Length: 406
Ligand code: V1P
Ligand code: CA
Ligand code: ZN
Image (cartoon, rainbow, N blue to C red; front, side, top):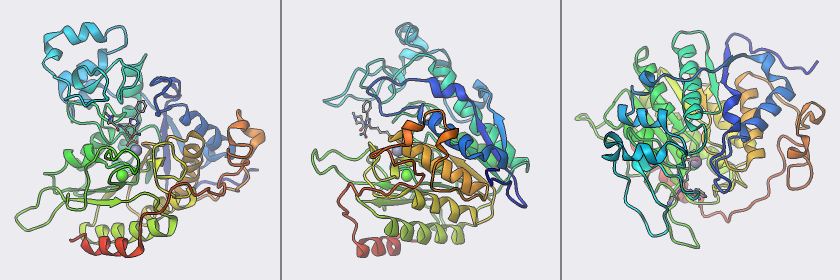
């Protein structure tokens, strides 16, 4: 007996298709879909499959994806592969989609910000259509479970790709599964709150709903420039003054919490509970989508925060306690073993289970991924090594909470 039980009084569904794990963005690319293999190993090793309904995801249809995206872009995504890219680029229908302007260090970009060069943010890789339509299908199945009342919490750790635009890929994101899920929710609920704890600004979701008063978007993210290079932290948007469009009554429906590097658990918790608490009071959402990007964890390869797995999970616990239908999605996360730990812990929180700190290594196919110094010593909540100097002063954070106006 592993002590795992189903939650009392509510239902959780888990949406996934293991095919996404085998995808490769490229050797040097930070996005590693096999982090989802590690997450699956932990979730199954602890026995959390017994606490929820697991659904194997089917690919989304082109029609479903066209609910947000440009039909030509969707055609391109459904046909693109390393072998077909050059031929597709010659097709006049796609050739009119000019790539975004190059910057000095950048690689060759084709239409829709896609590229076959290894250094590109949005590379064209083998079997990529399969990957894109599957993570999207999983998110759509999850939101369908919620809108039909069959689940109270639905989970897809392979989704949460918040940078994709209507007709352009951006920042490792091609199809914006989040926007598609919110559009489905708007068919049955009056108001949807989107919360984004990925270390990057949720620009694609914000942009899609900036004129939609029934959706409030709220992103917490690193904002500013790197110490060493002076470059802007990606994508460079989401300052506190970025509040979307104001209605004639003065309401606004985008909120942004720009944060300096090195923020710690206590500070993040203060920001999250104050701002989300106020947003919920003012907006009274009928459902919530929480993007749980794990690049906000300390020790992430791209992120610059000092947040522990427990605190990342506290955000999920806080949102869950609001008792509205909840869609939990993944997102970024570039130190694979910690991404797996965080999303396993958050699956446990969703199902009202508490996991022991000692990972059941005997039940895990690749225990070495979680063992030894530097890999977390077989623990689910390894002691965190502070890695970024903290540039967040308490008074700055307090002023920020005051500045976010309602
Ligand atoms: O900084 C940039 C762009 C590329 N330059 C011309 C400016 N891109 C970032 C993209 C980060 C995307 C995060 C996605 C998410 O929010 C959601 C899944 O987590 C970038 C970075 C970086 N350090 O920020 N791209 C890469 N690193 C990169 C490195 C190696 C190979 C390919 C891309
Ligand atoms: Ca964010
Ligand atoms: Zn991110």
